[in-house]
Length: 134
Image (cartoon, rainbow, N blue to C red; front, side):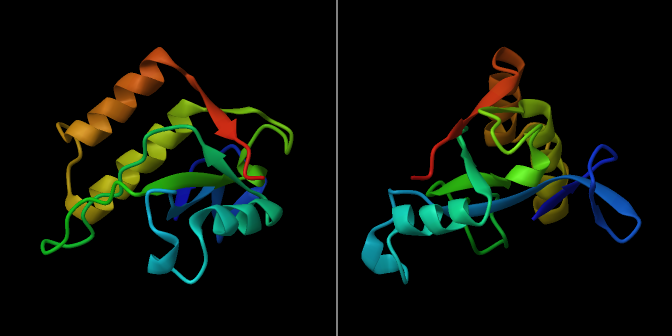
């Protein structure tokens, strides 16, 4: 998943990228429901440069027959941070990404309780902590 803006050395074609996000199973997912335990997967992703964001992440329902998923964590690649050693990320970038993601998947996002909760959280806490993966 990708959030596009104009402030980054990353690019996709002619569109510069602000951050590269992915989702991974949280520890609420039993290890036997995946090919590797969730914590181990996050450690591997961490070695590839992805960082866990300390924010409640809810994946929108990906189809009309599915429900939202609340058993995931949101991760960002370190190239989308101010530096590889950053301990926080600008929460507005996360909100922009989630706005685009929800709009593409489910349509207009305004009024969605999970999206609005994220927006309110970022309004109160503009910098989102990065959680160690090791």
